[in-house]
Length: 478
Length: 83
Image 1 (tube, each protein chain N blue to C red):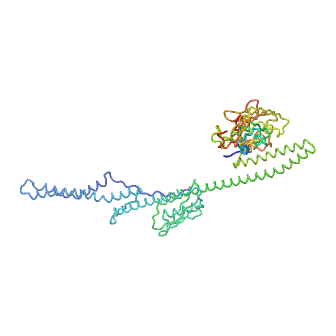
Image 2: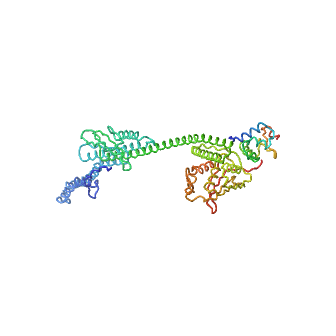
Image 3: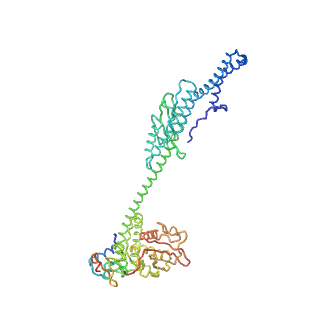
């Protein structure tokens, strides 16, 4: 939107000579008052013989002329000073107005050039002062906008501010396409229409329209100020709109998140119940007539049940509801038991316990979940190669480290960064296996216990190597 | 002070036998009835952590006393001098 610019019609500036006004005024007065007397004196000198003793009259005359010239000079200087005093007063007033102070508005009698000058200067000073006040008022209003104020509310407040600041009869700020408001021609003697488009980022946000009393001067500077006001309001409106949008999206996200948590809880509960009965009946059948297929059903039901638990764990982690226990326990027995529960009898596991009796501090159930995920990963992604688990105590740091190493292809560079993210699976790994949550949940569980879970740098001849670290205590009596 | 379930069980067992020495084995049975691989070091470490929570100076315990080679004993403030 382009603002219409009026053509420049200002006349060429007035140029005076090099001499100051005061000097020229003084010169004119001297010329008017002193020259005739001086001329008379010269004529007297030329035609009267001052040497003649009888010419006393002439001498007195000459003396009086000299005195008159001196008086005239003095009078001319005084008059010049007096005559330029109104100009000085006007200049002072304008200077005060320019400095933002109340102008003094000198009043001169009559209707001549000087009184017109004084009047127009006073008006100029008053206008300048008024516009300064209006601008301050408008800026005050805009500064008082609070974050989160609705754009419509802001528009109402801006209209009130404009009415008050510009002394309008009425004013409206409309957040619509400016073309919808027809242009109003000013009619002499009636209220003056004023309009300004709200522009922010080169986009019309709306329009401010209003009317001014017919008696109020509405000049180009006033219109410029009104347009400046409109631009400031547009920026505030745009900010308010953006803020409202962000707020709305935020609310939606929070609602969606809550819905997702509810969904996850519902799903995991609805899955756990049938899984429990499948497992129960399979075990019951197996005890009556042992069958390899029944134990597979039991194993797979357990597996599924753990995945569902991981899913539930995600929403607990994200809502910050994880409250791990702070029990003391040895790590190696948990590794052994988890491995047995996994039931991968075709894969060999070497457990090297060098913890020297150090006990981990944390939640044994959570550690079981972590171990289950890491050992299961080691089997699946390690291509059923052998697995090594080392448990080491770092006595100086007061920590226990459990390292789980497989002999598979390891983790590619692409996957390293993504591995611990939610719902991510390695790109070079079998698809369809696992939930993509195991490592994410495991790391969060470890961290909640004051420990951590990390993927070790790749080394030749080794597959993926994960290290669990946990807080630990020495096994000393005391 | 926030005690873990196991710490509470041990403290309760010791308080029930105030002034008497309880063997490490007994405490182990009280605290870790459901844990398969528990050994005496579980009791030692838990007692140390318990002292850090309830004793003014955990290095000079006034209430939770070690009876070296046997077990532990809880004494009340008045008995501390005699113990």
